[in-house]
Image (cartoon, rainbow, N blue to C red; front, side, top):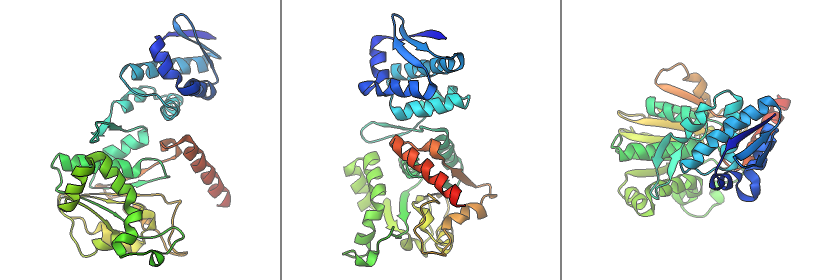
Length: 316
């Protein structure tokens, strides 16, 4: 079967991508051949695959006209939506802006899992975001915390992580405790700098409106009117998780992120992420689980996640 779709020359250039890598990926994922023609593009293949390719190209053309950049990640996610019979979500996701960074870049949900996560954070008091690396769990939580602070919904942003090291010992690192845990908090620093801008971020940090601290610093406090994010929560113990959750004060929101396949706790210690099972029936708490389809980093990350999932299933 052959079908044509109108495409102007400029849009074709943006669609094909560097060294035609985008169009080659489309051909591979949908098992079709795409060539240029007088009308724009010609799609060749069996009827079902050509129909899917036309739907994909039509949506990508709309995104290009709206100023969106097309990359391999966007193509993979769009193809997944079409295969799941949800093509309308391609444009819906692309138009769903979470917030705008200091440089004017728009942060958007890239997958359905991310959108469900964002909606849960907006509507629930406590949200668990559990899933593999590269799914945007922490980044989106920080973006929503920044948006809440800018909208005066909270007075403070508190970001924390447990000081558990992957195969290293903190005691051998130089400096005091804060200096030792700074490398573990670096991803949080970087995300906040991007969203606020370096100068605004530093002023808010100096005034105590942004607080970044190891989990041990939370003990004995009541956190009111705050947006609190606990990152790398798989490395909390159950006792630490209970301590953290019971810090919740009035007009506050908590987001707990973690990857239950990357636990660095000593052998025999149960992860604090078990709380997601314990608390799953409480209405004010949402549990959002990410899969390999939500990975938005380099496409190789998605393959790595899938490979490890298969390996763990074989061991089980």
